[in-house]
Length: 470
Image (tube, rainbow, N blue to C red):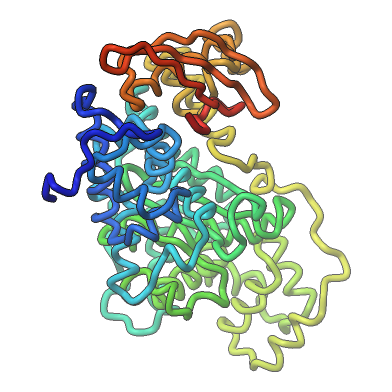
């Protein structure tokens, strides 16, 4: 990058005089450049993801402007990290960056297939997985990765491959052919995986789930049918389990779209993506409804609506999965399966299920509980806890009791945010002269020096303590 393209002496809002250029500016610019290059994103695509114009992205990368804190945080979120981790490690080999590039190489475009808000939620999921993994290791609870061979090599049909993988995993885990009481307990408690849930209000229903193996196993399930559709949740958990166990070695991060999107070009995320999805679907069906148990349940009886109800009840699956498993196991015709699907249960299973007892949201109760435990045993301080949970210094963390009390008054935090921005305006070390509460947040007047002159500027800070304008 030629130095002639850099605007060194900007006096406009957001510019940084050469006299106050800081080493951190070069570090931040390098991280932003590397992240975009690693993902193979254009300036326009990157700008859309973080909510700024393409020209601003260029100026940040060329060190012509200091990016606002909110923009750096948006970069970190898109690439599945917190700001501290993003500035320390960057996004080279980050799971989300690799998936962006893989999609591009396969003829898809993840930034077009999903909106910026969806990609930020997915990035937040990856950040939560990394945080949970680091906390588990710090507390001495790290569990060895489940190393399994792929038993389906050489098989051509995805459903045969999925069946082979499901039966293999059941044997390795010692599950036999028994029904699985709780997928959530199996994944979280026995295997030690991070499992998170969101709702369609947070993440588009076009995404049913996501999975990653970096730095540790993690799953995200979109509760498209709500918590009460726990049979759908169980199927999604088993589907993503297959991805983690067999697909993330070469692809550390995968998304699972809503069924009708799987053959769309912009969902060509990785090589042979449709086959991976088909295998994961078959894995879920055979993992939840194993052959021997299903045959023992049906016995010599004819496959009727009553049998379908019993399969749903015993194995904790939905009617569609039950009918398809029965059809495949007993050679039912397409017409037979269609009739069974149309014959709804007269006595639906309305019992509470352990896989319905979950809390959606990121970081959610799962990571929040880990953070509280880490503070209690002394491996995390309250400032770090706030960073992970994204709780402002001016708010309390109720679960931490007295230790979770607010660390700063709102006015103090607004003043500190504005004073820090003085550096980006070329005003050196500033002090806040006044702070006035407004409906939108705060107007803080800062005072500093520009050359030999004392100057004052008004800085607008939002209610969430983000810089609005200066």
